[in-house]
Length: 582
Ligand SMILES: Nc1ncnc2c1ncn2[C@@H]1O[C@H](COP(=O)(O)OP(=O)(O)OP(=O)(O)O)[C@@H](O)[C@H]1O
Image (tube, rainbow, N blue to C red):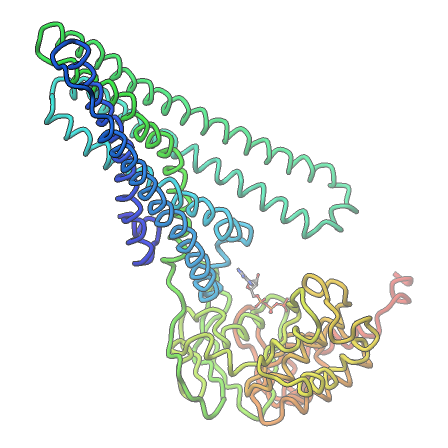
């Protein structure tokens, strides 16, 4: 059960089990001095109440005390190693495998969970579970085992005294069980409130420029403040509930100590228990509650970590995109065969069929929101189609591992993703084994050198988070350089030159012309002039193919393409002058 709940590896689970047993052993070992003390007390009673004239042999006591000390120390060290060290190793592995799993998740998953939610699972939930693995779990279950062993041993010695000692245990455990039921909804509320704050803060930071210049600034601040207050409130409710239940359970358990004194006094005065036995129970009673108290206080943490563990499990159990990892594609025609696709429940592509042939440039055009980007992303398996098939070299891409498939693609999207690293490394992502000469050649082809050489450290300049120190056009040129470097047989260009000035756009389009020679090219461009020479133009409207053909054919057929083209021609003469006239 623990293995599945906390998604433990075989090794991690075996370490946790070892840790639990060692903690139990440690708990029992710290009881042993009480037994030694009792034996010594027994000797002292014998001597000072006249039953024995022999002097007390202190050497064996000293030796046993020393041995016990060494034993306790050894068990403690071993426990520490097995619990803390193993727990941190396990949680480091868990973080890596979780990140690996996230990498393999289909993009549809990210549509349902936002980034701050995922970040919170990767950072906070793993930390919570790590803490529970390192301290809570072993102490909790070790405490339960050691208490049971001690209870059974004491029962064999004197069941009446043991009963007095433990009679309150079932009641306090029931209180704890109720606390779990009562607190779990407030625990979830607290989690959601925390997520709400991090989402809000992330959104605030991402849009800080917009927020600062907007009259909504104050209302935004109020929103963050309200969400923070909600976290405080839900945290207090959760702590209050847990506090009341745990302290009640703890105090109910402690009543057992009083019962031991009362029962013991009664039994001693009626001659049914010797004084030494009474002392033994008093010593044990004073110590037995330590592991149980730990159990009680750890149980709150344990319940709390169950929510984190279930959020981690949700990611782990989500089906990843799979497929053959070794596959050889010899030709690169992309066949869209009756493809339909829905984001969640909204179908955005309906029965789309066409072939993007190798050695040709196929353009996807159509009004905004008609599904052009979605279609190009389906070709690279960012999502899996809902219906129909996409084939490359006659093979269904659903059967190809996404990473293997992507190795055949060079992709340039309008929203460029750059890393907070040097320009050199950002281009190198296109081909990790690239030489310096290849990287520089790719940068030159993508017209990057114009601005790179002006930067203080040239190619070694660090460009900030997502390349924030560069202009939109410069960022786009870096992503084009990556595509040049990768030189893959299939090229997807989604508004690849949209942020470039006319001079650079013309030059880069020439370079793209060279890059795409003999390749399968799928291009999306809003400026229809730039795709006039394409071999095939697929015109989409509301997720369906409306027309298909070359520029001249489509213009002559006087349909949607013609209409869009004419609209753009009119808007190209539209300017400030036109604005003044209206
Ligand atoms: N991640 C998503 N989740 C849900 N719906 C989405 C998602 N991405 C796009 N859509 C919706 O799918 C439809 C097609 O979007 P898509 O981006 O493919 O259109 P497009 O033709 O490329 O648009 P544009 O020309 O404006 O870039 C739109 O209605 C859009 O709102």
